[in-house]
Amino acid sequence: SDGPSSPKRRPHIGPGDSMAALCTVAPPPNGGHHHVVQVAVGKEHGLFLTDEGTVYSWGGSAEHGKLGRVVAGTNEAAWQEPAPIVDFNKTRGETEIIVQIACGAEHCLALSQKGTLYAWGWNKGGQLGVGLSPKLKEVRVPMVVPFADKEVRVKSCSCAPESSACVTTKGEVYVWGSISYYLFSQGQRYEPGETVAIPVKLRGVPHEESRQSSVQGSPYLPSTIALCREQIACTMRPGRLQDDLSTFRAAMRARSSHLFSITRNRDATGRSERGGADAFRTDAVRQLGEEFSQQVVELDRKVHELDEARVECQAQLVRIGRELTVCDQQDTALTESAADLEVKRSSGRSGMSRTLDIQLNDINHFKMSNKRGKMQLLAQRDEDERRNLSLMQEYSDTVSKKHQIEALATLVAALRRGELITKSDNSSDDGLKVANSKRWELSATSPQELAGKGNFAGFREVLSISDRALNDISSALREVSATAQGSDAALLEEVLEANLKMRKEINLHIQEKLERADKGGPHSLGLQQYFNELQSEGYGGLSPRGFRKNANSVGAAASGYKGGGGIGGMFGW
Image (cartoon, rainbow, N blue to C red; front, side, top):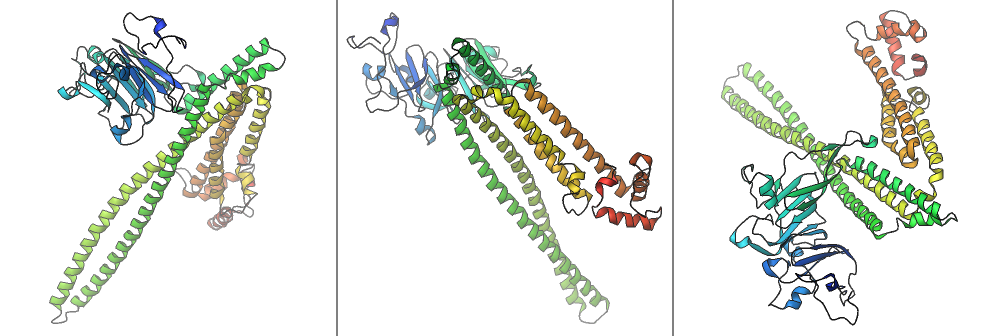
């Protein structure tokens, strides 16, 4: 700041200006925002972004529309005084919150929270990405950058003097402007329809494989991007959200441990714990937690919408099922009526033959019409079943993503409260408690345990319940690594997964034995061979009481077997 007694200086720095020309931009008089989160500068203009998602611009002039707002007349004060760009709302008819800004020499980019990219300013070299035409030589208000793929959502953007680039949520890199012309061999490697003035996807961007043991084999994709004339650089992050979550958790834990050790060595009186927690009570960590919370709200809304769509699709399938039943009933009735008429016509009654022929032709016509309707219903049912399957998959993916984001938000909140620091000594004990509870849950899935605790219609029902319980426990094993820390967490989870795998293999083996018992095989006789095996030494010589090797006794044994009793003894457990 120049100080209260200094003359007012221009907010933009031009040729010949020194660092002493810098001054503090006064807050607006209406008591609005006060927090600037990002700044970008061009040749003779600048932008800053506030925590409310509002973009302000200023500069030495409004030439070529680089300020992104209409400035009346030639009043330099109107150019040099930072003012908000309000035309983002007019572009799409809805409120846009900006999360990133970038400046080229005389053009700008702004990225919205919804992944929409805006551009304005000088477009001589196609650096705006909106095409080339006399009307688009300069764009004075923000304009949406179009992509060939309408589903593209941008996550990061950057500008060079006469170039622009961005990274999408899928890890794709797009470039336009002078760098596009350079990277595509002076335009010789463009595909049909690609030009220097529209976003062109870089082909052959390498996807690095992770070398970290926690995310082994997960591809790393471009995340953020930076330009400088004819050079481009990207940061890489795990492509799968769960792997990114694991990396983030490991980094935050390492940082927490490092900061705690530093503060503990510096002050052994107990203030170290407060200092370690204060390291995460910053605006950046708070904003990160707010972003995660907002993502959870959006994902929750999407889950609700997908659930409603699934219910609607399933109701449609039920309706089609009823209509198909009606078609079958009509076809049966028409067939019976045709058979009655054929009997009457074969009796040879005089004067009735022509009438019967007309009635039979009408019935055949009705049957053909009913058949066409049924085929249309079957085609519609196939389409709705595919849509229902797609909705179920998307619903499952969205719920999984929501849970992962909630875990991230919980982790950030715990770091801000200092819980991961002050309670680190008890993490191993907590991890052992959770692992022990999971071990008891696994033991409870044993078919022998289940068979003795409930009334079941048969052994297949016992196996079905056991498989479902194992699947539920499998999805909950992550709780162990989330509670424990360090190598103990990985070891406990590995032991539990081995136990889970063994129990699944046992259930699969029993299921195969049941299939062979019911249907037989190339070298077996079905149930008879099954009970013969029970008498062998490999199964302890156990078999149903009164068993005799004949068809009647096999049938009696089968009836007793389907009742569900004595399952553990049957297999020698």
